[in-house]
Image (cartoon, rainbow, N blue to C red; front, side):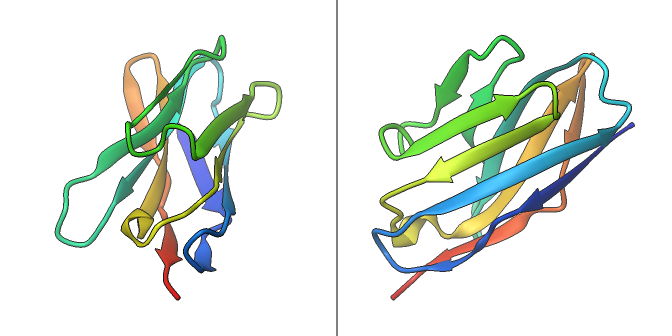
Length: 115
């Protein structure tokens, strides 16, 4: 079992920045992909950014150029640096870890972009 704990959410004004962090614990052997998803009220959960164990990244179109995902394999952490935030980025952000074909999710952290 893998446990994921997110941190770093909060309230930020449009144009501001936030950094989300996710730490994996438990049986963390051979976690391959990690990533961030988000879910806004009334909408489906969607991919924001993902990163493999070798550092290959992919981003949602809405995140390209504004968000950066990074990973520390030794510490089993994945971060999401979010810049130029917009009101439409408001959502609960979830960390995901994929281990041997099984998905593990964090509890989510709220990000609110509002003036």
